[in-house]
Image 1: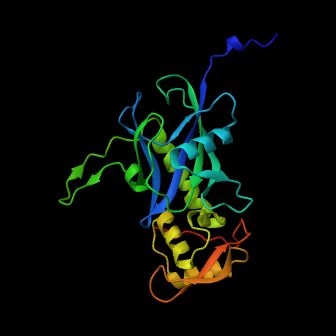
Image 2 (image 1 turned 135 degrees about the horizontal axis):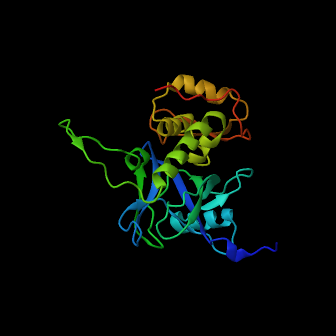
Length: 255
């Protein structure tokens, strides 16, 4: 039987971005308020439809540039000053995930150091950095102990995509050098420790952390410089080494 394209229903492909950064010692994600239906007025992850002339990586990189002004870089080569780590996260294809039509989304995870305030674009009416715990909250209690209703959940299935992206980041910094993607080109051990604390949501012992990261071959490389931007005595500056896997891994504490 010859192939008949009309025998198969058409569907669209989108890319959604879980863009994470550390701001004010908290793990934050980029959220945009939708300016159009469906889910008009609801917060969502940035993203958009894949164009006919681009592959998935190109579409994700384009959306990243449009939403943040960042350019994705190949993690196998040194990043330029405004580069961001970008990797494919997962594919989401529930037939009812988009009320407009059948849409399959290929989500990507993007990580970068402390980023400036975002600017809304496309069909977004507003954009902001929000703590991931706020975006994923399911209600809570006020100061008087009374239950409060949560804000409207993220549009589409973006709460699940965000949760998956956060867990990917949390687990991957255990065994890889991915945590350095949240840091500037040169950073201190204290700044790196605060990245781990923000991503994992736990406090770490400074001395034990320093011993582990400086004792892991290829993880950190001294630059020969120091800084006083943290206050106090000058702190030694490091850059990311060539190691992509940490041995032994930096296991997150149980909470």
